[in-house]
Length: 628
Image (tube, rainbow, N blue to C red):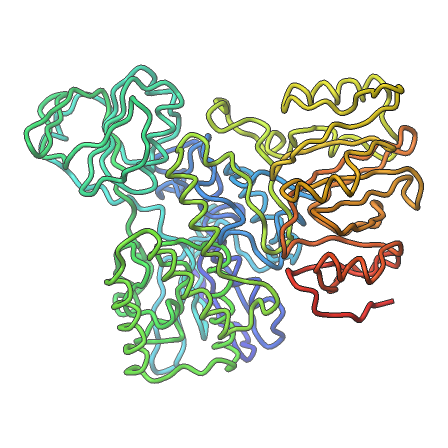
């Protein structure tokens, strides 16, 4: 046992956990010169819950396995909705558009990418378990006792502030029902669920009615379970496949027979308890310990962050979550501002009054939409308090509603739908393998494999004719599109095609899809005109009605255009999107101010490229000053 009394700088901050919440705290604090921040993480790497562990039960140190992930898990909502960070987009991380609902490995890679970019791991003490945190009222500081798991060395240190960021999806809430003790089949909590294929041809009972029950039910369906029965207090009312059904509340179990309210029963092979997790903080003194259910507005946390009885103790991510990484960043920035005396905390009575207002709002919720509205209001308030992101929206209520509508429409296909990032302005692409067909572990390379592999595989050295033939065949097989055909004079022309959001189309100069006069008559299509020449061996013009824009592809900073110019064949590969008001286009010297006025867009570019005169954003042309 070693006692450590370190020379203290002005302020010392302990962060408990290096998952998404802990990394948000490190990101918010790492640039503060007069703060020393130390993060304690029991695992060997950052990432928290997103670090998949095939093991269940107890680890080599006698501690419960932290991760509740299973290998085939995909995000249950679009990454563009409340997850993507404005200061580190998925487009920046992966370098090109990716599907909206990533597999767990891709999310983990994204989390770790930001940690690498800002070198956040240097603040983390890995394999370190926090055993005790208490408050020394006389010294006005926290006493933090930690244990190095491999060496068993125990260290005590002092901190002015403690940020609790260890998550609340690891310790199971596992209610027991009469007869569980004699059930002959497999009985487990969803935390221990790993392989859905283990339940092939079986009848499985899921106890619980939230996100884990919904997701595991569909995993079991996909991997061939004979029947899935969901028992819960309130029906979820999703369009379940034929072999999945919801029943009333479980009452008891007799042998392999499960009984429900109303007298119905069923014989099952396995029972999986999808009943959620506890907020568990065994290291905290009782006077510091948050005691709450999984709610939007936890008790005793001012602004969802500050422990009212001692605001030097802060919690991150303890809410039921609509927004995730963005909300964690906002909370961390508010914590940082309080530590740096930039955010003044009111007295205890005022803090409790604010908490009560939020509790009343939560009590009045009647629908999933109301739930979205309340947490959107919360994150937008934090954004106003911190100035975290002043130039782009934080709330994404419309996208949340759209994602929920896609889920209600089909539990099988909603993860395949593309959404648009409000931070990179890029649309996602459809997954290379649709969710229902992804029956092997969805690896990161497969996730990054675009619908056309060539978007990343081919470079400016060009395609051989054989490679182009393969590419053309892939497009035809995937979408039924033909890249080119011959007219009566033998001139190659591209067919007129309506291009849905997320589709990849290809054109060869000098193909002309339609004349601009013809384009005027069909405002719902996005038309492309391509001609050879220019700085990048080809210029294209796009129009939705009377206006056109010229863009030099090799200077494009538009994330909606994943463009590769292949000079030997003058092939242009364009990831085309329906470009609504608010999207971004990078324009070149050939574009006139009159073109922009007609198109109804405004200038606002962060590209700084010499050949780029600006990014055109927004639905209304408001600025006539062109930056030279």
